[in-house]
Image 1 (cartoon, rainbow, N blue to C red):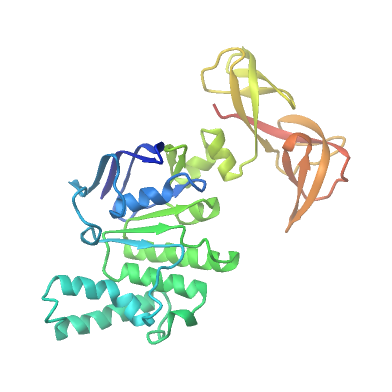
Image 2 (image 1 turned 90 degrees about the horizontal axis):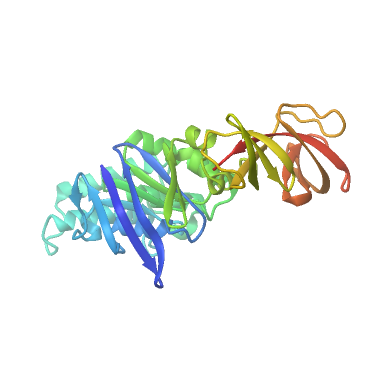
Length: 354
Protein backbone atom coordinates (compact mmCIF):
# COMPACT_ATOMS: atom_id res chain seq x y z
CA UNK A 1 0.00 0.00 0.00
CA UNK A 2 2.53 2.62 1.18
CA UNK A 3 6.11 2.57 -0.01
CA UNK A 4 8.83 4.96 1.19
CA UNK A 5 11.89 5.06 -1.05
CA UNK A 6 15.22 6.59 -0.05
CA UNK A 7 13.96 9.69 1.79
CA UNK A 8 16.44 12.35 2.85
CA UNK A 9 15.76 15.34 5.10
CA UNK A 10 18.03 17.86 6.85
CA UNK A 11 17.38 20.18 9.77
CA UNK A 12 19.47 23.33 10.27
CA UNK A 13 21.90 22.04 7.63
CA UNK A 14 22.42 18.77 9.50
CA UNK A 15 21.21 15.37 8.18
CA UNK A 16 18.08 14.25 10.04
CA UNK A 17 16.85 11.36 7.88
CA UNK A 18 19.24 9.51 5.58
CA UNK A 19 17.92 7.14 2.95
CA UNK A 20 14.79 5.97 4.76
CA UNK A 21 13.02 3.12 2.95
CA UNK A 22 10.19 0.85 4.12
CA UNK A 23 6.71 -0.28 3.15
CA UNK A 24 3.36 -0.78 4.90
CA UNK A 25 0.97 -3.47 3.63
CA UNK A 26 -2.82 -3.53 3.75
CA UNK A 27 -4.02 -4.07 7.32
CA UNK A 28 -0.47 -3.93 8.74
CA UNK A 29 0.55 -1.82 11.73
CA UNK A 30 4.19 -0.84 11.85
CA UNK A 31 5.85 1.01 14.70
CA UNK A 32 8.66 3.53 14.29
CA UNK A 33 10.61 3.19 17.52
CA UNK A 34 13.29 5.73 18.32
CA UNK A 35 14.55 8.26 20.85
CA UNK A 36 13.29 11.84 21.00
CA UNK A 37 14.77 13.91 18.18
CA UNK A 38 15.39 10.92 15.90
CA UNK A 39 13.13 12.32 13.17
CA UNK A 40 10.08 10.09 13.72
CA UNK A 41 7.55 12.94 13.72
CA UNK A 42 9.25 14.63 10.76
CA UNK A 43 8.91 11.41 8.79
CA UNK A 44 5.19 11.23 9.60
CA UNK A 45 4.70 14.85 8.57
CA UNK A 46 6.34 14.16 5.22
CA UNK A 47 4.06 11.17 4.62
CA UNK A 48 1.08 13.36 5.53
CA UNK A 49 2.24 16.10 3.15
CA UNK A 50 2.86 18.69 5.86
CA UNK A 51 6.59 18.72 5.08
CA UNK A 52 8.57 17.78 2.00
CA UNK A 53 11.63 15.54 1.64
CA UNK A 54 14.78 16.85 -0.02
CA UNK A 55 14.86 13.70 -2.13
CA UNK A 56 13.17 10.32 -2.31
CA UNK A 57 9.64 9.12 -3.03
CA UNK A 58 6.43 8.58 -1.08
CA UNK A 59 4.23 6.15 -3.02
CA UNK A 60 0.74 4.88 -2.30
CA UNK A 61 -0.51 2.09 -4.55
CA UNK A 62 2.54 2.90 -6.73
CA UNK A 63 1.38 6.53 -7.23
CA UNK A 64 3.85 9.28 -6.26
CA UNK A 65 2.26 11.66 -3.75
CA UNK A 66 4.82 14.46 -4.19
CA UNK A 67 2.29 16.80 -5.83
CA UNK A 68 -0.74 15.62 -3.83
CA UNK A 69 -1.88 18.14 -1.16
CA UNK A 70 -2.39 16.82 2.40
CA UNK A 71 -6.22 16.88 2.31
CA UNK A 72 -6.28 14.86 -0.93
CA UNK A 73 -4.07 12.05 0.37
CA UNK A 74 -6.90 10.60 2.50
CA UNK A 75 -4.57 9.88 5.42
CA UNK A 76 -5.58 10.21 9.07
CA UNK A 77 -3.25 11.63 11.72
CA UNK A 78 -3.66 11.30 15.51
CA UNK A 79 -1.54 13.67 17.62
CA UNK A 80 -0.19 13.44 21.17
CA UNK A 81 -2.03 16.64 22.19
CA UNK A 82 -5.31 15.36 20.64
CA UNK A 83 -5.71 18.37 18.28
CA UNK A 84 -9.45 18.63 18.99
CA UNK A 85 -11.46 21.79 18.33
CA UNK A 86 -12.45 23.17 21.77
CA UNK A 87 -15.31 25.30 20.34
CA UNK A 88 -17.02 22.20 18.85
CA UNK A 89 -18.86 19.45 20.71
CA UNK A 90 -17.91 15.79 20.34
CA UNK A 91 -20.28 15.15 17.44
CA UNK A 92 -18.94 18.08 15.41
CA UNK A 93 -15.33 17.17 16.17
CA UNK A 94 -15.82 13.66 14.81
CA UNK A 95 -17.92 14.92 11.89
CA UNK A 96 -15.41 17.59 10.84
CA UNK A 97 -13.52 15.47 8.29
CA UNK A 98 -16.76 14.01 6.95
CA UNK A 99 -18.20 17.49 6.38
CA UNK A 100 -15.07 18.64 4.57
CA UNK A 101 -15.21 15.58 2.34
CA UNK A 102 -18.90 16.15 1.58
CA UNK A 103 -18.36 19.81 0.75
CA UNK A 104 -15.49 18.95 -1.58
CA UNK A 105 -17.82 16.73 -3.62
CA UNK A 106 -20.59 19.37 -3.86
CA UNK A 107 -20.98 23.11 -4.01
CA UNK A 108 -19.87 25.02 -0.90
CA UNK A 109 -22.91 27.25 -1.36
CA UNK A 110 -25.41 24.40 -1.51
CA UNK A 111 -23.95 22.55 1.46
CA UNK A 112 -24.71 18.90 2.20
CA UNK A 113 -27.72 17.08 0.82
CA UNK A 114 -30.23 15.44 3.13
CA UNK A 115 -28.83 12.04 2.21
CA UNK A 116 -25.31 13.19 3.06
CA UNK A 117 -26.51 14.59 6.41
CA UNK A 118 -28.18 11.31 7.35
CA UNK A 119 -25.09 9.38 6.30
CA UNK A 120 -22.92 11.70 8.39
CA UNK A 121 -25.02 11.15 11.52
CA UNK A 122 -24.91 7.40 10.99
CA UNK A 123 -21.14 7.42 10.53
CA UNK A 124 -20.53 9.51 13.67
CA UNK A 125 -22.74 7.15 15.67
CA UNK A 126 -20.75 4.21 14.31
CA UNK A 127 -17.46 5.84 15.32
CA UNK A 128 -18.72 6.66 18.83
CA UNK A 129 -19.69 3.02 19.28
CA UNK A 130 -16.32 1.88 17.95
CA UNK A 131 -14.43 3.95 20.58
CA UNK A 132 -17.02 3.21 23.30
CA UNK A 133 -18.29 6.80 23.69
CA UNK A 134 -21.99 6.35 22.89
CA UNK A 135 -24.08 9.21 24.27
CA UNK A 136 -21.19 11.72 24.28
CA UNK A 137 -22.35 13.55 21.13
CA UNK A 138 -23.28 16.85 22.82
CA UNK A 139 -20.50 16.87 25.42
CA UNK A 140 -17.82 19.55 25.35
CA UNK A 141 -14.22 18.60 24.69
CA UNK A 142 -13.15 20.29 27.92
CA UNK A 143 -15.48 18.03 29.92
CA UNK A 144 -13.61 14.88 28.91
CA UNK A 145 -10.62 13.13 30.47
CA UNK A 146 -7.37 12.79 28.55
CA UNK A 147 -8.17 9.21 27.56
CA UNK A 148 -11.65 10.16 26.37
CA UNK A 149 -10.27 13.05 24.33
CA UNK A 150 -7.77 10.74 22.65
CA UNK A 151 -10.59 8.34 21.76
CA UNK A 152 -12.49 11.25 20.18
CA UNK A 153 -9.35 12.13 18.21
CA UNK A 154 -9.12 8.52 17.03
CA UNK A 155 -12.80 8.49 16.04
CA UNK A 156 -12.33 11.74 14.09
CA UNK A 157 -9.36 10.28 12.23
CA UNK A 158 -11.25 7.06 11.41
CA UNK A 159 -14.55 8.68 10.38
CA UNK A 160 -13.60 9.60 6.76
CA UNK A 161 -12.29 6.03 6.16
CA UNK A 162 -8.64 7.00 5.63
CA UNK A 163 -6.38 4.95 3.38
CA UNK A 164 -3.65 5.14 6.01
CA UNK A 165 -3.71 6.01 9.71
CA UNK A 166 -0.76 7.62 11.50
CA UNK A 167 -0.18 8.04 15.24
CA UNK A 168 2.38 10.55 16.56
CA UNK A 169 3.16 9.61 20.21
CA UNK A 170 -0.62 9.44 20.88
CA UNK A 171 -0.40 8.20 24.48
CA UNK A 172 2.51 10.29 25.73
CA UNK A 173 0.34 12.52 27.94
CA UNK A 174 -1.57 9.68 29.67
CA UNK A 175 -0.84 7.83 32.91
CA UNK A 176 0.34 4.22 32.77
CA UNK A 177 -2.94 2.38 33.49
CA UNK A 178 -4.95 4.56 31.11
CA UNK A 179 -2.24 4.18 28.47
CA UNK A 180 -2.41 0.38 28.64
CA UNK A 181 -6.21 0.32 28.31
CA UNK A 182 -6.28 2.74 25.38
CA UNK A 183 -3.40 0.98 23.64
CA UNK A 184 -5.31 -2.30 23.69
CA UNK A 185 -8.40 -0.52 22.35
CA UNK A 186 -6.42 1.02 19.49
CA UNK A 187 -4.92 -2.38 18.64
CA UNK A 188 -8.38 -3.98 18.54
CA UNK A 189 -9.78 -1.16 16.37
CA UNK A 190 -6.91 -1.40 13.88
CA UNK A 191 -7.37 -5.15 13.57
CA UNK A 192 -11.12 -4.72 13.09
CA UNK A 193 -10.91 -1.96 10.49
CA UNK A 194 -7.82 -3.41 8.73
CA UNK A 195 -6.54 0.11 7.98
CA UNK A 196 -2.76 0.19 7.47
CA UNK A 197 -1.14 2.23 10.23
CA UNK A 198 2.15 3.81 11.28
CA UNK A 199 2.59 4.24 15.02
CA UNK A 200 5.40 6.47 16.30
CA UNK A 201 6.72 6.10 19.86
CA UNK A 202 9.85 6.04 22.03
CA UNK A 203 8.21 3.50 24.39
CA UNK A 204 9.17 -0.12 23.66
CA UNK A 205 6.19 -1.48 25.63
CA UNK A 206 3.81 0.40 23.32
CA UNK A 207 5.71 -0.83 20.27
CA UNK A 208 5.55 -4.49 21.27
CA UNK A 209 1.87 -4.26 22.20
CA UNK A 210 0.58 -2.68 19.01
CA UNK A 211 2.99 -3.46 16.16
CA UNK A 212 2.98 -6.22 13.57
CA UNK A 213 6.45 -4.95 12.63
CA UNK A 214 8.92 -2.70 14.45
CA UNK A 215 11.36 -0.34 12.72
CA UNK A 216 14.18 1.07 14.85
CA UNK A 217 15.07 4.63 13.81
CA UNK A 218 18.50 5.78 14.99
CA UNK A 219 20.94 8.39 13.76
CA UNK A 220 18.79 9.10 10.70
CA UNK A 221 18.59 5.48 9.55
CA UNK A 222 16.44 2.39 10.07
CA UNK A 223 18.87 0.02 11.76
CA UNK A 224 16.48 -2.90 12.40
CA UNK A 225 13.22 -3.99 10.79
CA UNK A 226 11.37 -7.09 11.96
CA UNK A 227 8.46 -8.65 13.80
CA UNK A 228 8.41 -8.13 17.59
CA UNK A 229 9.63 -11.64 18.40
CA UNK A 230 12.42 -11.37 15.82
CA UNK A 231 13.84 -8.09 17.09
CA UNK A 232 13.61 -9.24 20.71
CA UNK A 233 15.44 -12.49 19.96
CA UNK A 234 18.03 -10.80 17.78
CA UNK A 235 18.31 -6.99 18.15
CA UNK A 236 21.48 -7.00 15.97
CA UNK A 237 22.82 -3.74 17.40
CA UNK A 238 23.91 -2.32 20.75
CA UNK A 239 21.57 0.65 20.36
CA UNK A 240 18.53 -1.56 19.74
CA UNK A 241 19.39 -3.75 22.73
CA UNK A 242 19.68 -0.68 24.97
CA UNK A 243 16.43 0.74 23.61
CA UNK A 244 14.63 -2.50 24.45
CA UNK A 245 16.16 -2.74 27.93
CA UNK A 246 17.21 -6.31 27.19
CA UNK A 247 20.18 -6.32 29.55
CA UNK A 248 23.54 -4.66 30.03
CA UNK A 249 25.44 -3.63 26.92
CA UNK A 250 29.21 -3.41 27.45
CA UNK A 251 32.24 -2.91 25.20
CA UNK A 252 35.08 -5.37 24.73
CA UNK A 253 37.96 -6.36 22.47
CA UNK A 254 38.44 -9.64 20.69
CA UNK A 255 41.45 -11.59 22.00
CA UNK A 256 41.57 -14.90 20.16
CA UNK A 257 39.27 -17.38 18.48
CA UNK A 258 38.71 -21.09 18.99
CA UNK A 259 36.39 -22.07 16.16
CA UNK A 260 33.28 -19.91 16.53
CA UNK A 261 34.06 -18.97 20.12
CA UNK A 262 36.08 -15.89 21.02
CA UNK A 263 37.82 -14.72 24.15
CA UNK A 264 36.58 -11.16 24.68
CA UNK A 265 38.35 -8.87 27.14
CA UNK A 266 36.15 -6.34 28.99
CA UNK A 267 36.39 -4.19 32.09
CA UNK A 268 34.32 -6.87 33.86
CA UNK A 269 36.62 -9.75 32.95
CA UNK A 270 37.24 -12.05 30.00
CA UNK A 271 34.20 -13.78 28.50
CA UNK A 272 34.07 -16.85 26.27
CA UNK A 273 31.55 -15.84 23.59
CA UNK A 274 30.07 -17.72 20.66
CA UNK A 275 29.72 -15.37 17.68
CA UNK A 276 28.59 -15.84 14.08
CA UNK A 277 30.02 -12.49 12.92
CA UNK A 278 33.41 -12.10 11.28
CA UNK A 279 35.96 -10.48 13.59
CA UNK A 280 39.66 -9.84 13.87
CA UNK A 281 41.96 -9.84 16.90
CA UNK A 282 41.82 -6.59 18.94
CA UNK A 283 38.59 -5.54 17.19
CA UNK A 284 36.18 -3.56 19.38
CA UNK A 285 32.77 -5.23 19.86
CA UNK A 286 29.57 -4.76 21.85
CA UNK A 287 28.36 -7.51 24.17
CA UNK A 288 24.92 -8.06 25.69
CA UNK A 289 24.93 -9.42 29.25
CA UNK A 290 21.70 -11.15 30.25
CA UNK A 291 21.47 -12.51 33.75
CA UNK A 292 20.70 -16.21 34.01
CA UNK A 293 17.14 -17.17 35.01
CA UNK A 294 16.54 -17.26 38.78
CA UNK A 295 20.09 -16.28 39.73
CA UNK A 296 21.34 -16.84 43.26
CA UNK A 297 23.89 -14.29 44.42
CA UNK A 298 26.71 -15.00 46.85
CA UNK A 299 28.68 -18.20 47.07
CA UNK A 300 27.49 -20.96 44.82
CA UNK A 301 25.75 -18.69 42.31
CA UNK A 302 23.79 -20.93 39.95
CA UNK A 303 22.81 -20.65 36.32
CA UNK A 304 24.44 -21.19 32.96
CA UNK A 305 27.03 -18.79 31.60
CA UNK A 306 29.87 -16.70 32.97
CA UNK A 307 30.14 -15.46 36.54
CA UNK A 308 30.66 -11.81 37.41
CA UNK A 309 31.72 -10.60 40.83
CA UNK A 310 30.92 -6.98 41.65
CA UNK A 311 30.10 -4.61 44.52
CA UNK A 312 26.48 -3.50 45.09
CA UNK A 313 26.11 0.28 44.78
CA UNK A 314 22.34 0.69 45.16
CA UNK A 315 19.13 -1.32 45.55
CA UNK A 316 15.78 -0.04 44.22
CA UNK A 317 12.34 -1.56 44.80
CA UNK A 318 10.58 -2.32 41.49
CA UNK A 319 7.19 -3.88 42.27
CA UNK A 320 7.76 -7.66 42.41
CA UNK A 321 11.54 -7.53 42.16
CA UNK A 322 14.57 -5.53 43.21
CA UNK A 323 16.73 -3.57 40.79
CA UNK A 324 20.34 -3.87 41.89
CA UNK A 325 22.96 -1.45 40.57
CA UNK A 326 26.48 -2.84 40.52
CA UNK A 327 29.89 -1.27 40.11
CA UNK A 328 30.57 -0.19 36.55
CA UNK A 329 26.93 0.63 35.83
CA UNK A 330 25.60 -2.92 35.46
CA UNK A 331 22.00 -3.51 36.52
CA UNK A 332 20.50 -6.86 37.56
CA UNK A 333 17.16 -7.92 39.07
CA UNK A 334 16.84 -10.11 42.14
CA UNK A 335 14.08 -11.43 44.35
CA UNK A 336 16.01 -10.91 47.58
CA UNK A 337 17.97 -7.81 48.52
CA UNK A 338 21.73 -7.75 48.97
CA UNK A 339 23.29 -5.01 51.09
CA UNK A 340 24.86 -1.91 49.60
CA UNK A 341 28.62 -2.43 49.58
CA UNK A 342 28.29 -6.21 49.51
CA UNK A 343 30.33 -8.16 46.92
CA UNK A 344 28.05 -10.52 44.99
CA UNK A 345 28.46 -13.13 42.28
CA UNK A 346 25.88 -13.48 39.50
CA UNK A 347 25.77 -15.75 36.47
CA UNK A 348 25.28 -14.00 33.10
CA UNK A 349 24.76 -15.18 29.54
CA UNK A 350 26.86 -13.20 27.06
CA UNK A 351 25.90 -12.49 23.43
CA UNK A 352 27.92 -10.72 20.74
CA UNK A 353 25.94 -7.89 19.10
CA UNK A 354 28.40 -6.88 16.40
